[in-house]
Length: 189
Ligand code: GAR
Image (cartoon, rainbow, N blue to C red; front, top):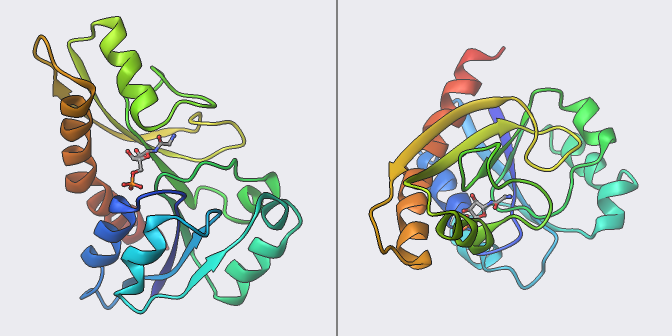
């Protein structure tokens, strides 16, 4: 059994989608959902699935408390799904190539600190790009910077709103993130 922890800071639509996807899988399961925000909607969403949750702050992340929980729960793989804090070196070293993130743009475009959610789509709109998409990548010590695993694109017609761009990107996230996680875990030992 491969045990996943998902870290999320906000709404948690990706987290819930991933939890649902693996519900009937007897080799891969979401065993923990962690958040740095006790008010985050993700905690509500996953409470329906009887998955343990943990709330922590930046200090817990930096001082080893979070790593201790991951080890105690024998977590094999960490999935970031709208998680806004940087993962410290201590955790990256213990989970080398076992932490992935999804970003709502075609990296290296529009990544880095402060680039999340609608800030990203706003930038795409301002630049007048004719396509955008998602990037799933390994996590290193910089924001949105690790090796790219997968990208999917969607075309952007003229006169789109931020809301419409967000919907197109969200649809790609729902379609691909769980499958890519499954592929990586099936290929790893
Ligand atoms: C997703 O669009 C994800 O790509 C983005 O946050 C959103 C979370 O939505 N992540 C980033 O911007 C990371 N830099 P959700 O909480 O509904 O899953």
